[in-house]
Amino acid sequence: MSHESRGFEPSRFQKPSIFAWVVLITFLAFFIQGISSADISLNRLIVGSGNLGEFFVSALPPSTSRLDVIAKSMLETLNMAIVGVTFGVLLSLPVALLCARNTSPHAIVRVAMINVVATLRTIPDLIWALIFVVAVGLGPLAGILAIIMDTIGFCARFFAERIEETNPKPGMALKASGASRTAVIVGAIIPECFPSFVATSLYSVEKAVRSAVVLGLVGAGGIGVELTSAMNLFRYKEALTIILVVLVVVIAVEQIAKAIRARIMT
Image (tube, rainbow, N blue to C red; front, side, top):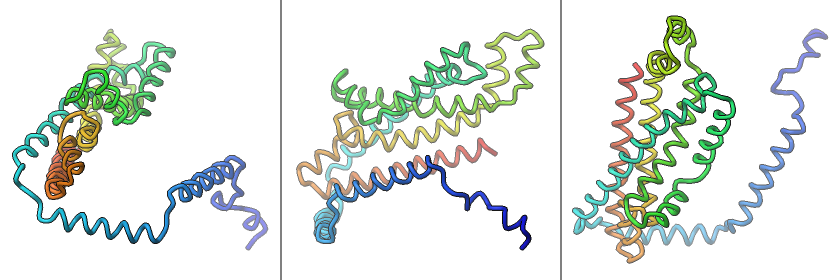
């Protein structure tokens, strides 16, 4: 090995920076604290496994006595997800245009909207559901509004990033021909981004269906209300039926969305 080769140190073997050490130590501190506060013990895991087994023994076979009510609640959950995502995606597009560097009218507007989107994305959908349950009362409307907020936080970010990645040449050509700013956005930017927008929107539908189930646990309508009632009343056979229905519907939605994405992106 030559002197020059010995003096070369690959980047993966370079000494970690102070920042890297701080991040690592902070992570380890939180990890150790989390393990400690969870009070993990072999005895608790053994007892928990037994309780879980008792639950499945009590829940089998699944009950179909209220399958019509469960199906109706599952349909309500799907309605919440589809309506919420539709409004959320429609509102995400103008928000994303205000967030993107190449379409925002002013830097101040861009920074303000980025912070708004970050706030919407930071607050969990369950918290939004609790807020809207207080605002509009129990029921699907609270769930729809929560999904709208969550969808805007999710979609607007990815829409804005895709808008910033567009090829500027078609827009410049339209602008040189006298097209307005709106015409450039509609005629050049949105058509290029459309497949990505659709793919992101489909991911939002998958996410919203799963979220809508959880939102029902706090009174925001849908199948979550039925699941909470079944568990609280120890109707484990009915609870297992609900869980299986949710599983089938979520998998079906994911497969349909996957098939649509595959057709659009090809």
